[in-house]
Length: 132
Image 1 (tube, one colour):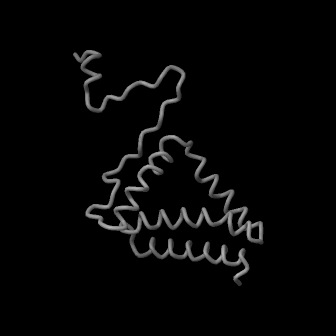
Image 2: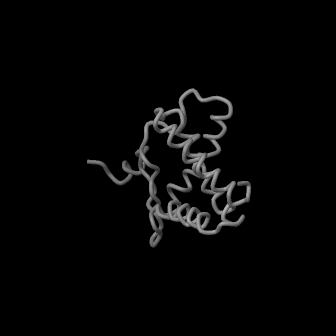
Image 3: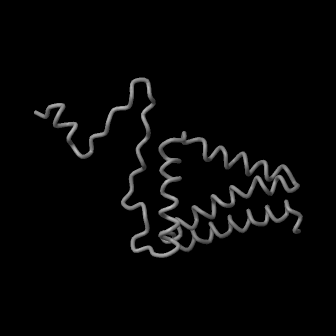
């Protein structure tokens, strides 16, 4: 029978949260976080993205990122001047960032969908800044 001391020494054992503190969510399961054999720009982007992703998945409630993206996108659709374009820019950056990170694992249909979404958002931003 395992004792409490044996349990604490186990490599997967995690410290208990302080009394009254909300426990943090673990990172989502997955085989690999980084693209195998990545070099250059992809490796740098993946490594720099690891910290914001870990923060997003563990420290921020799950509803915050989607809610913020929806609010910014709706603001960009409603406001037809340059502030609307500024509101859509973070959504565009987030979509392009996710598309770049997921690109190696996508099939043709997924790649086309991401390119179409990025193109649509670029056109929305361009119209809000008066380029069309």
